[in-house]
Length: 321
Image 1 (cartoon, rainbow, N blue to C red):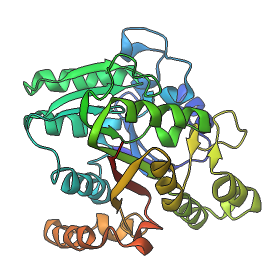
Image 2: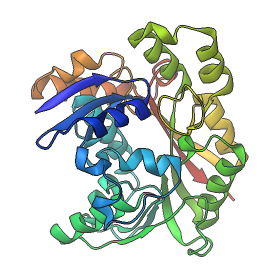
Image 3: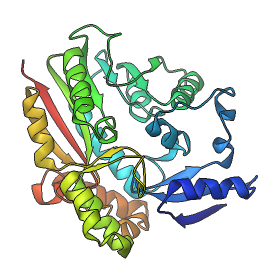
């Protein structure tokens, strides 16, 4: 059974969980990853699911430890659209035997998919429980890959130009400080071979403001326009933070960042396109209609006007120096 809640402040919601017992329930939260996140209340107990170890003080890790990332890319049609779009383009370039680093693998959606197809995957994530889940899934599926708990800002365990391709699909949009984003970009480029591809995902500020203000009129205020559109930064320490440490950007800004790091744009893709805006309709589609929608989406996902309103953007860049 699921309970759907609209929430603004995660802290208030989680304090509510501590007052009410839900022993047989999972809670479906409409959160501002602009996703439905399945939360098992037992995960909210202090470290129980991680061998009674304390949760890290990193606010991003704390946020992600509280919901089931494992279902994020398969929870509904729009989620599947995001995943399938990335695969459509990755499949053009990745081949068995390639050495690929995923610096924010989560619970392994992309890493396990490609490892099962002969790609030599190294999967990292900053969230310890996600790596535990990934390792268990790899064992259950008899898939070989290398895994480690690791911060994408420090890839010092890996030598220069040691990977054919690098996935950076998450770290940037959880780093509000430009200095930290620079570390991630520099490290990814350092370990990437010349001519290799960097797959770079970001969250579009134009989508974020439009989506929030249409879902909740409370966001139709100047302060939110300034925070999301002008500043593009939200911190977990902000009094009115509705997610966690976050950096919102634009397609043009991400292209400029890529160019600064000597990346030649190969593709720039709207991962969910207009699917998130029309989520109720897309999620209600049966298998046949969703297949048709996906085909339409794939044929138009590089259109700049669609890219400008997509929730997630994926820039694929080639290292040219």
